[in-house]
Amino acid sequence: MKARALSFLAACAACAACGGAAPAGTTSGTGPRAEAAPTATHFAWTAPLRAHVVEQTERDGDRAVMHYDVVVAPSANDTLRVGYASFGFDSLNGQSATSPDLRDATTKLAQAFALQQPAFIVSRTGHLVDVDLDIKRMEEGLRATGVFTAEEAADAEKLLETPVMQSQVKAKAGETWNVWAGSWLPYESGTPSPKVLVVPVFGTRVESPVRFDPIAPVPGRPGHVRLRATSSVRGDAMRDAILRYLDALAKQKGEPPIPEGEITSVTRDMRLEVETDAATMRPDVATSESTMEIAGRKGTRRKHELHVYRFTWVAP
Image 1 (cartoon, helix red, strand yellow):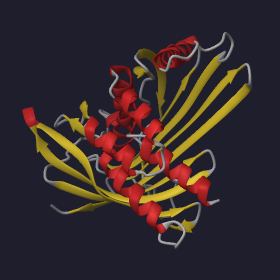
Image 2 (tube, helix red, strand yellow):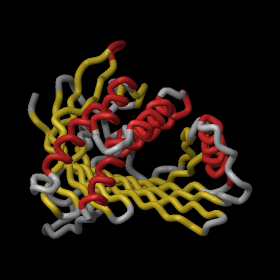
Image 3 (cartoon, rainbow, N blue to C red):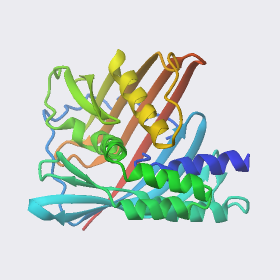
């Protein structure tokens, strides 16, 4: 049990964009009358600004609860830098992170996790401009986990230094910003039109159709709205992107290319949901859930990932 738990934590720490045991609940109105939802959202994050965040993460049946601060500071060219601070783990699969058999490992992994997190560079209107990666800090974080062998850490460091992997890390990190704020700009009343987003997958740009639900009020929270979007990726583009990446990885390691039929199809379904202050786009609760199925010669593998972020905003 402990080995599996530490493996899960190491997987979180090894992913620079890691980032709920259950989806954000859908609240039904219980008051005497329905509350009118604001008709549109407006991004108004300021600097300095800070929020305490509790994140619940689930990956393929394993669950972790962690906490950290989101810190907003001014950045160059009239942008904002949204970074992380004060990481810690609270529990793993229901067991306290301070229990004797987990305490040392979770403390070390929290330190490693903090080193690996990128920062978001966003415009004053909330759009993601860039993801700031500090590759040397990320590599230091990999070594600091104490879980990987020297050879495994060296292989990971080589990957992090490739443009394709850096592009993918930025894309994965960008998904976190999108569920917090980026996907909902602008968001107006009525039924939003479906969109087709183009997302990078290991150096290839893949089209991802997205459907948005109408804006809805959050009962008992005047001025707050619930927003929801779903996307589904089908077809050959994602499969081919993954195969090209795996072939490049095999070549780098001096191994033969991926056998024909090893991967025949890849699908990905994703749900994003947020309850947020419509006047500022500072979220109360944000949820992302994704399911990927990879079919091939050895059958079908299913990977499920869920994140729930709960924000407590602190006055500057």
